[in-house]
Length: 295
Image (cartoon, rainbow, N blue to C red; front, side, top):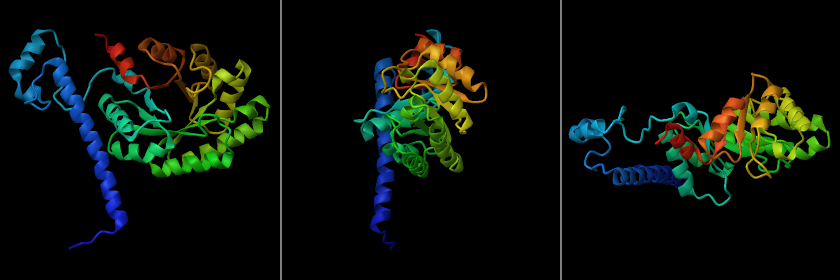
């Protein structure tokens, strides 16, 4: 008989707990879907194979596409792959984070974006899926020392993050200490790239003049960032079409631009993409997809 030490047992319990959370979420969602749509529960999500009579009724009613796999939603794929499904509230629970990951898997979002303390949980829940784990560094003020931001990024990467959204030192921008701003970004960029992660730099555009937005975006590019990002969502304002256009012109076609903060509808998201955004940060991702695909 093999005896396991305490640390191994705790690790196994943690892994099993995460899987149970996801399975419970899937069961709840499937049960709700069956209840809402009048679909029987006998086929366990395999109606195409097991309930041909009911499937024919759906086709006769006008359906042009069916899915036969549990938990897969083949809708809005193009916009879905541009969305970071986001939950950064300070009171977010493990249960809510498990739901976020379930939704990201189901709808095919680009990433989940969570606070650093939940990176390990998300990494476990999303293992084996194409969904990335994104976290935030120096969030939401950007006022922590460079060494702390770099350490926070390294710890998050060790826990499984593959994308890092860091907040610039906004006070340094306002002070025109651009050398400090660039060093701050470069230190985190170096950490991220050494760990195989990408870096998105949040400039918190609502606190900056247009000139400062351009300068901050150019500094992020010079320091090795992969994206510039409009907002934390915790500042006095969110993403605007004007800011996205300005940032896109500042960094050119080489870098990504992430629009985040206050994007709640498909029209909002479409406007940001048209302005030059290549990624959307939103907590309303499912609503955006539903609007994108129509009734």
